[in-house]
Image (cartoon, rainbow, N blue to C red; front, side, top):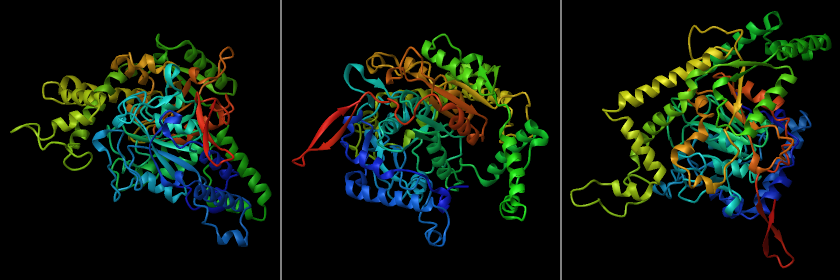
Amino acid sequence: MTRIGRGHLNARDVNLRREVRELTRRSQRSRDYGNPYISISDDLLRAEDLDRAAAKSQGIHRRMGQGPDPIVDKRHYILKSATHGYTAVVKDNIVTAELPTTCASRILEGLQPVSQPSTITDRLNRAGVRVLAKTNMDEFGMGSHSMNSAYGAVTNGRGFKALSVGGSSGGSALAVAAKLAHVGIGTDTGGSIRLPAAYMSVLGFKPSYGMISRKGVIPYANSLDTVGIIARSAEDIRLTFDILRTPDENDPTCLTSSSWTRVQEAKNRRRVAVLGSQYVVVGTDQVKEAETGPHRHSDWKNLRSQLVAQREFTRRIGVPLEYNIAEMHPLVRWAWTATLSYLESVGCEIVPISLPSTRHALSSYYVLAPAEASSNLAKYDGVRYGAVRQSPSDDVGGTLYSKHRSDNLGPEVKRRILLGTYSLSAGAMDNYFIQAQKIRRMVQQDFDDVFRMPNPLKQDTEVKIHGVDFIIVPTAPSPPPRLRYLQRSTPVENYMNDVFTVPASLAGLPSMSVPAPRHPDHPWRPEVAVGMQIIGQYGDDYSVMYLAQNFMTNFHPLTNMKRVQSHKILKQSTNTSYMSDSLD
């Protein structure tokens, strides 16, 4: 199921030492890059140790890449994964053993639960990935622009021209875009991975709900929270997903082995319906016979032709009419049209579809998510953990911790707690919370009605031969806004940025944001960054990544895109002192 410990099969042609040296030459002050970090590991401060580790990992990759031989076989398991030696940054709501976990809130300042590290960081460590820092975010994940942090806003650029980095995983997206790490790990509740990815011109993947364990993730809304991945290439996302996806008995919402079997059965049913007689299931014994048997050349040629035939079928792309809203920015609308035209030119079939309930999805989300948050955040009282209370009680005979919460929680968190508490009250439960749950089920059913692959979580569902394989929509209705405009906006206006990402979250579907095509009259700059979103049926995560890697990342040279407005690097002068130099 995972790629951990596969030896030479994981080897990659990488230059880790050069990339790590470029990283360690830079300033380690978070403010020099737009404030992406809350805390950094000792590894990042010990440049020589990090350089030696990168050189060692690079050497292992190259030795293992030479293939199996008597010498290499003895070191088969030295290469822990395909991302061995890579660097990662982790959102500050994911528990790590070495660094504090604050959720960007003063109420959890200094919290470091050493005995309960997250499954995610444990898997990264076992795979040989080095976690360099905990990234800044909206407090408890509540926000769309990473401005609601107790440690300062995360920005792309400075001053009058500063742009939003998206939220709430804006710190992870900024760190990856600025090449401060290979991979960023975050969480996605209503678009918190995909929106920052779109604004920072990187790739952001939200898996199907339950694909990655949430053990050790401080919750915002349990039924919506999903661990996601941000990277500069679809391949890095796929390889990281291979490491992180695994059943976890410590997380009751994580898929079990039997659920994985049902997902695979649903995929096979779609393949049989689409491919008919071309479909073939190949066992490992057949592959071994084709590779080593007496007629191995002809057998492998026949087998390969059968497997290739399975991949060469027309993919149907759905275009929901309800997403073509009047408020969409002209550049976003042009990029959407250009993406669909390109997919049609490479053999995909474009199909108009209707998702009527999605127009109510945003309203449903902002009832359900605050309701769950008001319950989850009730435990932060200053009695058990987090920041120490400054007074024993509010007043004589008063409540114990309301002043502590008022002093240490930010305005957006308090706003959503009040909203959620009200929607769960006896007088409002039926009119708000129950109605929002009904809308959520309607949104899920709308998606099931248009996808060709049946939902593996539902019984007795049939393959819809005329359904679609993917849905392509914009990630956000506009390019990244200036911070000065956001500071004058109302909370409701800021919530509208999630209008295209929330439906997939409510339905628990896999979704990936990729940089959209560039307009011929507008050179690609951070101010005009546009993201395009791929949505698949539940459990069809690898198909979403396949489409992104092979078709949707051909619009830009991903290695040298201009993603950030400026960053700083340290150069060593002749007198061994350091000076900063601003680069574009």
